[in-house]
Length: 554
Image (cartoon, rainbow, N blue to C red; front, top):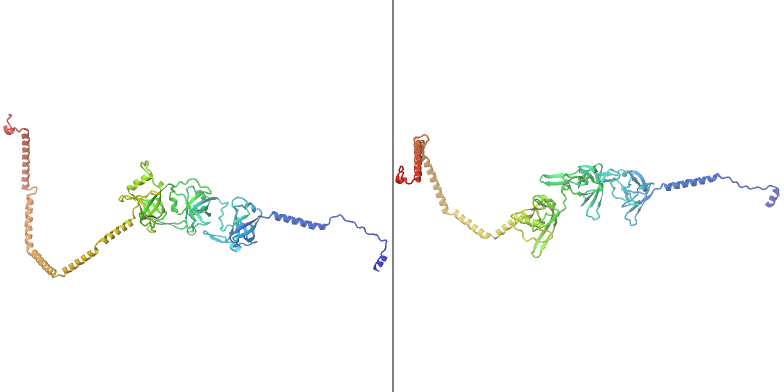
């Protein structure tokens, strides 16, 4: 019905609509196109400005946090930690970090990373700002090298010297001691550098310590400069008393290194960056001369060598000429004797030879010295420590050496220590005392004491003492009588004798008559003697005068 009504009500002669397609651009399409361009630009910019991604391994992730911990170089942010994971073996922490664009230029095999925390070391306090802001990862580009993206973080912050004027030097020491990274380096008690690194040598026999000395003090290091460990106190006891030496209070607590050029050495040319030096244990060692030519000898001691150790000095009349290098123990089964061989090394360059040396070799020279009395003896080097030293000197009274043992080194005969000589003498004395018949001597002495006691208590001795007392009383009475009776007569006799002597003195005086007559008589006797001598001379020449007379010619 609806269809019928529609057909009847709509006229059949109505015009039909014509559909036409438009060719103009719709503005609606601009919006997605612009959005596409912006998105592409943003994507390109994000990709082009994206920095490198690196991984750093640490022992622990203490203070690190993903998405917050920064990576800084000279307090400038250059990256951020993206994630923190554990290594497959669970022994390390792997930190993934994203750096800013351009950081790839200084990411080489020499680049170093470490965690900056509050730290007190080597007398310095660092990283206090991390107490409030949190820890961050420090970066040191280092020198140029091969590009790298995987690094092993340092557990100890390094000392940054890149770009600073100065020089690095390498010190070789037997042990590290109290030195650490950051320990100061002194020149005449002025801090001029510090220790920047250390590591064990490949053979494990020494420690290599790297130090940095800033400009202009690095120019004071020469080829013959000596470095020594200035840690703690250097105490020496010598003839001048007790000497205490220390660089500073800091070196006493944390250690340090000092250097100087000894006055007895030529400075040589200036040292170059990277030169290697020996690190001496103490200041006194830098003045020791270095000798390369050494002569080894062996000595055999039969007594105790307690207090003698390797490195003990060998002296000749107070001058050090070598040191002890080895101490062993030997047992001779054929002789049933125990010997203690002590090997010494003598610095031949310490001894200057004068005169005509000729072609004498070391063996013949040692033989002549031994025949002259050269002997080795142990002596006390320090009363405080009880350390011994080997003293070489001539002992003309020493007995000739026995059979010298053939071995690897020439042998120097020995003499016992003074204390051992005293001990031996005491032992001999004790042996002699043990051989004495002490029981018989004691019995005889007891009998003598008993006899003396009987004599003292005998009645005859008492009577003798009483008689002696009477004799002394009579003697005293006689002396009294002499003083009262004989003394005046003796006084008169002495006066008469004095007068006689005075008269005799007057007779023999120079101006006395007796003296004059005696002198005259002596003169006449002289004349007579001369006449007799003249006559004797004449008769000796003319003996015929006795027969013919003096005036006769025939």
